[in-house]
Image (tube, rainbow, N blue to C red; front, side, top):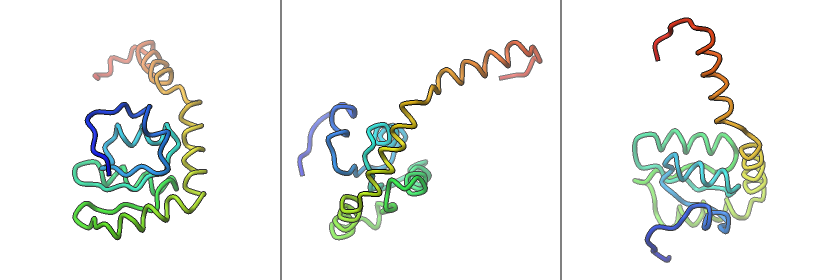
Amino acid sequence: MLTVDEVPHDGLIPRMSALVHAVGAGTTAAGLRAGVPTVPVPVQLDQPFWAARLTALGVSPGPIPFRQLTADRLAAALRRTVDNPAYRALARGVAERLAAEDGAGQVIAHVQRLASAGNGAAW
């Protein structure tokens, strides 16, 4: 294991065979954009939600809750993730869909529709 200070997600994650992380929204999104399968280790707050989403998308074999994390469990999960090409294929498919998506454009169009409707809805 190598411990480093800050590293840009977009420079590191695409080079990985699998990503192990606490499943915060930012790292989850970076892993999905990079098309890298994930071993989620949720700790708190919204992290169990994101771990469940990764599993449902098929890019993860399932979470290892932090309190249940052991070297043996992590090694087994990494082996399953790396040895099963379906996780990588599905992760790449998600990355392709995300790259083709214009999320900001959809938000702008929706806000413009609301504004032009002039219904006085409170934000």
